[in-house]
Length: 195
Image (cartoon, rainbow, N blue to C red; front, side, top):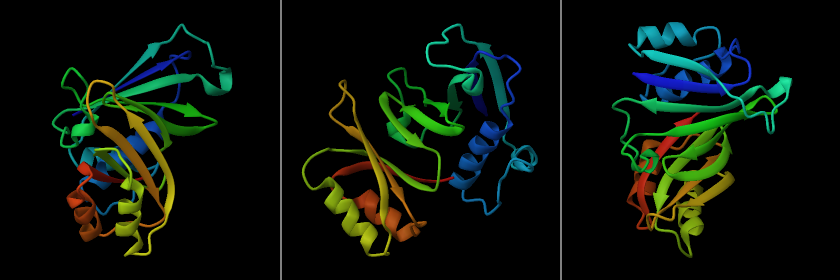
């Protein structure tokens, strides 16, 4: 079961695109070969047994909102989906928060880590022991498959001695590449997401 809460100025906001992106990410993580889009997302979710509970709550804080960007944030909790330890917050819940900027979905918080990245392409999320050589080690593994890094976002959590790194890639990494990244000494946990 997936619980999604949208905080927005417009309680009748159309969230179909965002729901489709969420479903696409979950289905891709499950290894399903389906191509998820706005038209078929709800059907594929039903077919896969995904129950999506959505709640739209009014947000009275219009600090940076316009009518063109009426959505402030999205909070997603996935029941039984806590295999990636970096997404677990201080209360033991899997937590992902995002927002829409210029019509594009961004993640702004994963677990206890505040950061920002767009939901697009191939992404590696990993909790790491941050230090010199981290990106060199990741780059070395990815270069074996001729994969280029498209962006990097790094977030530090004050409560723990781990950081969260988000790495964008231009190509889908093989399962062997993901395994090699997971085995890297600097990485604690690692997950590949495709949007």
